[in-house]
Image (cartoon, rainbow, N blue to C red; front, top):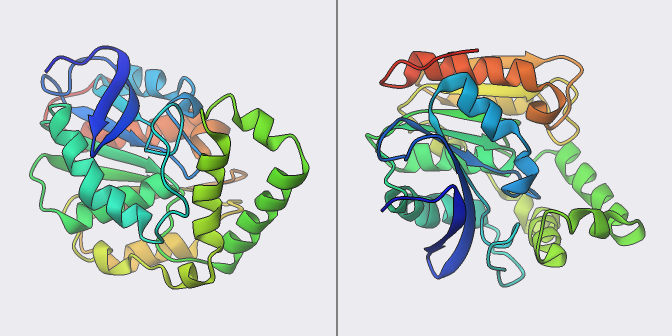
Length: 267
């Protein structure tokens, strides 16, 4: 199957929008981008293009069901929605795009999904994972920030601003926000999966992340038996790839050069 530069894939009964930069995933090492809890293909901006230029790898981004122009989901989302994405959807998607070797690069929810996938499957094609602002447990600061953004969503023009990135804004927002604010979600914990990761890990964390503390990084270092590289970026919040794109690209490019099976160029 030859992928167009953009389009839709039917995965698990859903139409998922995607964007591909560079070679086919079947022909070159591929970096698969997994977006945040309110993210989409579009919200990555030009980061995928810069990442492709910095690494020489194929870069594939997609919007999970309920986000971007992808099919909506039934609400409320199940509280194990990240585990389901990692164990049921992502394996099928990687097969569908012809993924042969490469990295998972995830941000926030996407980072958690990458960690769950790596810790749940012995996928010989996976050479490493990059976790940008990951969550492995639920912290008070996370819940407080997510509760605050719910108020913002209900009292400001945030829905109109998000409409630029999501076909069904309410489906995207309520699915993510409702799960995180469910009292039962406080017990969500993926530390068990961390112990089973068998590929190198790079963590990129903003020192001023409003959605998580350095404790998330510490747990990853404590629980993983594989090599873990950490980049703590000063004066950076929850979105290092937007707030400090050059530093974030540098970390990923150096990690890709060290882990991907074929040489990659760096800018």
